[in-house]
Structure formats: structure tokens, C-alpha cells
Image 1 (cartoon, rainbow, N blue to C red):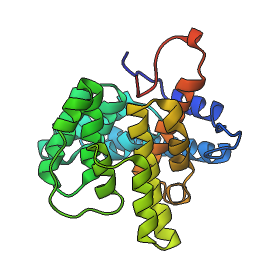
Image 2 (tube, one colour):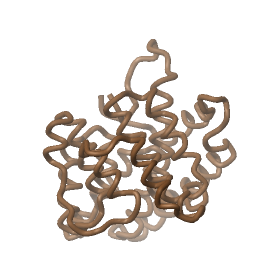
Image 3 (tube, rainbow, N blue to C red):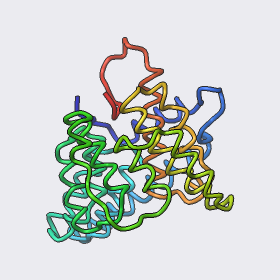
Length: 262
């Protein structure tokens, strides 16, 4: 089933399911409300700019981001695609469109978007992980591993080790062992662990199920670095966690499937 969210629908779900398995909040409700207010304002401001100039690329970019952070994946996709319509050269670098496709369950389109991004950036293994995720959802583990993008240059921690995990060469616990052995300073380790928790969680969600993955996804959403910086990928981690948690807690009788994972 396609994920067709009404504006803000996801945020109401997020607030409702903000309690963690242990009864503690991954992201406090007050922060969720602040995020909703901030990106609602960003969306409205961008829409006003587009009334003045319907070809304002930066306005489509800002509105697309705001919509994705609000859980409106269809709206984000339309804005991101409009950017490419106005400037086709943006297609090769538009990984954000790939993420919108992924959460809309358009996995073949997502896989293509991450593949062409590899022509733009041949270092970023995070992009390769999203390509794997998309191919896994479309065609299964064997094809996803066969289709792993090739990287020769170094990448930032922990992506070389995470990529080995997705390739089946490292176990999830070994990723954390390597991070511990590196003895990063506390601040940098918190940043590295954000990425590790997110993608170990996603890997386990794909291969072993949501219950196994949820503690890691929760740690990514609750991570101090992510919450302080509010980066694009932390917003994705936050949404992914709450979507997965909702899928576990939602009663079967409600029907439908708004989770990114089957």
C-alpha cells in the first residue's frame, strides 16, 4: 500500500506514540511540538515565496524538506521532483528524492536515485546503504547484496564498518566493538553512535524484524548529537523510529500499513 499521508497526520501519530518501550520518551513531546511548529512555518513561508515566483528552486527545496520532516512524503516528493523538472542537472545529486521514494514504497525509483547519486559522490557509503535498503525491499537480500555499490576511497566513521555489516562481513555487535576500540572522544563518539544506532537498527529491521531493531532505532532518535543538530538524517531517524514503533503497537484491527517496512 502506498504511503499517502495527509498534512501533519504523522505528527499526530508521533506524539501519540512518543513513549519508548521502557516508558521513557525517545524525543520529548515538547520537542516534537517545536519541530512541528518550526517546519509548518517553513512550509508556509516557502509556499508564500512560490506564489511570487513559481520557479524558485530554493523554495521548493525548503518546502520539500519541511514536508518530509512533517511526514508528508508525497508532498516532499512533488517538491523534489519539481526541482528536477526546473533544473534537470539536479537529478544526479538529489538523494533526498530517493528517501521520499523509499518511504512512499517506490523502491525501484529509490534504488535508481541512489545509484545515480553514486556518479556524483563515490565516497558516501550512507548513500550505498539506502541503495541496499531499496533493493532489499524490492527484490530481497541476495539481489541487494549483489547490487551493493563499490567504494574505494575512505569514508567517515562508522560507515566503512556499517557497509561491511550490510555486505554480511560484520555482525551488528562487531560494529559497536570497532567503535569502542577506536576510543573517540565523547562528543565525537556520540555522533558516530547516532549513525551506528540508526543503520544497525534498520539492518536488523530488514533482516530480523522490528522488535529486534526498535531499541537501536530508539537510541538513534534519542541521541544527543542528533537532537542538538536536527540534521536531515536525524529527522529521518526520528520518523523511522516512530513509524516502526507505531507498526508494532498498532492494533491489527486498524488495518492499513503506514510503516516503511513490510
